[in-house]
Image (cartoon, rainbow, N blue to C red):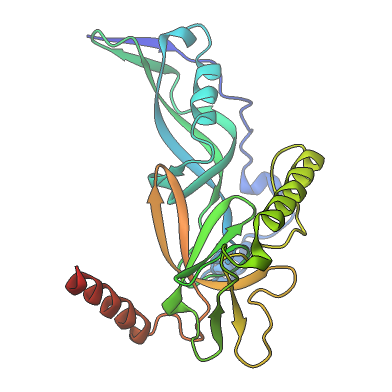
Length: 278
């Protein structure tokens, strides 16, 4: 048994204008010529941005607590999807607006108290594509990879085999049992970090704060400059995506030819050696 619930109006209806009403003085021949000129031209250009706004449609099951206000329930359900990877959108939902119901009624099936309704809305999505070049801030140097933050939110990992070994090398930092790296130095650095956290108020690192170099860093073989420079920002090419816990992370490369089979062969060779050692 299916019960229908009347939904609120989606919004104002737009008046449709006839072509003749829009341009009454333009002859029909000129209109045909304009149509011929527009034929063959791409209406939508391919986006080169990692952010896009798209018209999305979705089926929602609104809880019975919102039976008197289904619009509020639908908006709250969309709010719960923000900053999560949505497979149908192929990206992370950042914001939504212009919610509309596609039908005047919502259905309640059998004994299920949830109101099933189809909605449409404008979705702002973070959806980087493969081979896209982006810029992130380095947060960790490691012999195996370099970790970055993109827009201070999204994680990026650049594996070792996607760092040009003939240009960059990993320089290990001082050991913890080094006399110059004793408890006093660790304590003073911790106090400084605590002061910075108190000043910021949110526990996050300041924008201009340097990455800790206790574990080492990637440096240029000839000049000795640190990877990412003084500000720590690094441009990379997106070569892979990983979805875990409804969140999207990226795999990057700074190789001049990031999609060469040589880099992937190096990775497979290392993994096979690890298995044989085990």
